[in-house]
Image 1 (spheres, helix red, strand yellow):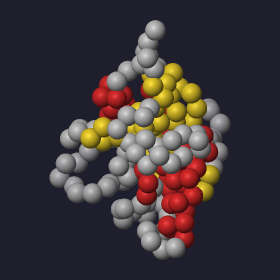
Image 2 (cartoon, rainbow, N blue to C red):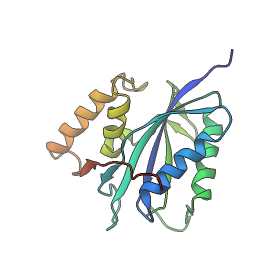
Image 3 (cartoon, rainbow, N blue to C red):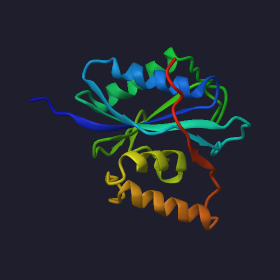
Image 4 (tube, helix red, strand yellow):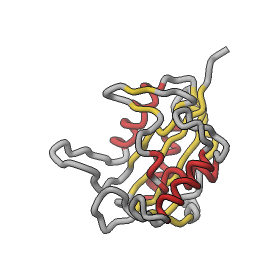
Length: 180
């Protein structure tokens, strides 16, 4: 019997038809063998975090099941980004506006630290646009590094934001547009 892992993917976009790009990216992932799309959160409108931009983001978190490796999933995410128009400018430092961003947030309970891949995603604890949609679809998932549930991590983050310990982050849930 094949071993499968539960994987969580962060999806984001702040250029173009963001909701449609996220939907296309998610559907493209599901066309690969050995990947089963389980669920995707509602889209969330969120303020840019850690970057200066006038363009707000549409974010979501998706859950899938796969028998592929974490490295193979990372390759598929990068390929999907390229197919949907993402270009990475190595000359620019920091975060940039983008058509699509697909982040490998969790690969089961794997903890990986290599130059190419860090799991769980290193910034998940500080990103409301990750924890809020993930708490909506998998509140009881246990973070393998902290030992806390996603619901608890979300609660702690909102407390840190409210107390001013980290920058304010605005977020609101939306709805997926009807498919055309």
